[in-house]
Image (tube, rainbow, N blue to C red; front, side):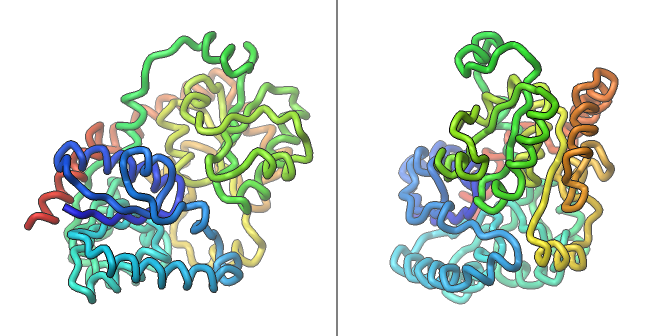
Length: 369
């Protein structure tokens, strides 16, 4: 069968790659064309566009890049027409993918949405468009099924694919890992400042300043979509402790982490690393979002648990004194024990291993029907 997959961010590339791997086990002759990243390409997808050319975050940023976004939409529709896939699989990335879903439905294509847009956070009215345009919705967060049921839409909760990605990690020796990364023996703080340029610009300088003032050992998990020169420019230094494409290896040995809101907050928790969640956007984007967003938390950890498990430092709270205080809590033995107990409960709520296999089975059945 011919599958056309669209993922517009680093997390979508990860989940898309695991889905492709599972699909190929069930359909070895599958032809897969994709918008995504290096991980999806490594699993055999023909990459049409890389997510580094697609990721625009925030209201102001989208407006500034509107011409590029419209050009990408037009090209995507033309490429889908030329490919004529058996099924279109959309992974999160709602601003773009929901427009493509509408177009595909008008063309009579089968549409799967894997990893629901976070419409439960804001723009809940989008559920009606999803109900109209999407033939199969596969959700990965436990509370999403109940949300859709309120609108008389049945969806499948397949569990979170991060559990698979993390469970399948090879064994390692901490001392050897630290030595191979030249990280020394002192407690290690992982910095995950996001994958988009605007996130990194907003987060990284203050993260570095805080850790240097505390005299802590730290390393940046570099985004594969960015170059070392960009991090050097943002930080104003050439001797950065930074590693690319090794985020999971870093989290496996980290004692705590500063993490930009997003999928990385959940990844960090699943590796059982106490964390401080950080977010700062442009003032206009933040003020707009504050009025529209209908959720109490921004991190997936707290959303799934429906209470504050990890501290969120958002906008004006993202400052050096707060970062220091919360990071010290992450390194305190008593606080760590409480966080780790919550992380154990989090894993249970996320549905256990096998999400990618369950998703691939549902996609194949739907595409074949």
